[in-house]
Image (tube, rainbow, N blue to C red; front, side, top):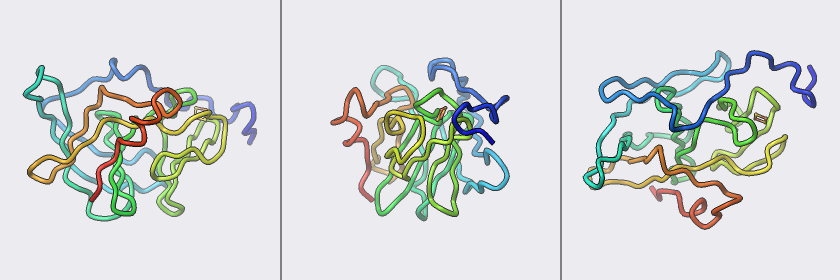
Length: 168
Ligand code: FES
């Protein structure tokens, strides 16, 4: 396996721009990305914001620490140490779909093997920034609401990136 050239990763799934993602207003899916990386199942629903009809995603608060990956919307929802975070599924290096390794509580990129903490902080690998966070809040019904079209990069907007967290 050659981690430097990425030659071991032909066929790794690539993600295009978030605006290209297909979203359904009625069907929701949470799926494991690969065997060996168990993903806790969950459900989400698509809601429309009262402001501008924006598409928002609503999820129950995860019951325990770990990651839930919503492949349909290319969103990762994490609960970790009494905080919740939402991330773009794409690795910030070259947009490969990230994987969650429950056994070590880390995200791992299958393409060039960058690793990230549960809060999205970059650990090592080819990436040059943290995972990209999505706008997140908790609503009055105690659901986590995510705006999949509002993305914060840690290298361009550190303040917004740091603030994109829900205290549980
Ligand atoms: S795509 Fe290169 S480290 Fe993820």
